Length: 290
Picture 1 (tube, rainbow, N blue to C red):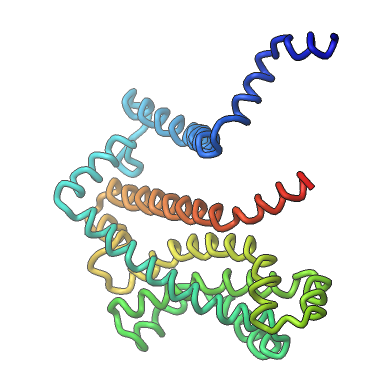
Picture 2: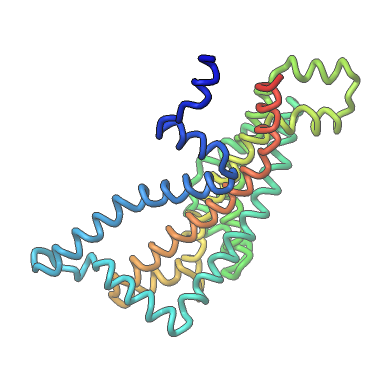
């Protein structure tokens, strides 16, 4: 009797909210959390921008060297109307994506070889670790001599920036795989490709996906140095053009464009990473229900 009365008793509001969240489709909850995260993240920059707008409007500060957000948006709108902004964004995005693809391929191949075979690691790792310490700007003169001032040198420089975090993370992840898992695979007489696909790949995939996001972020950093190498289009060129023509609003507009593009591409890659890692959620739920 007491059990039936307990079941008939209405749930508190907090429990009802948790129950509704649990029954809601995962996509709705995910978009809700994403929206809340974006709103919280925008709180600080929006407050600073509003404070600077008020400070300039009241005459407390001068916006000649540090323009307000409204001035930056006007400059970006003028560039958009003229078609220049889309041209610059398209060129920069193309260079970053090409450099990301080539850097990812090289980092994945060499990182896999270095992490899987100790002899390859002893052969390659000291040289690559030394090259990793070289600043990106130091490569610019050599790449101009080797590849010229056209697109090849720019894409190669971006690929160099993408390569190192992927190589290092993947190599370390492979070396840190639990040896017991490898021994289990060897006891079942797994061949090399079976050992990689069924044991090493699932164990290293989370670290590898994080390294992809890190490499993409460095690709956006390296594209600035790449576009200083005689580029006629691109957001890096827009930075130089704004400096030479004395337009700080254009400089900050290019910086804002870099920030937005970098964040959007990282967000897109994070969504793909979550999809690729759904097998982990299925495995964990299976363990919990076991």
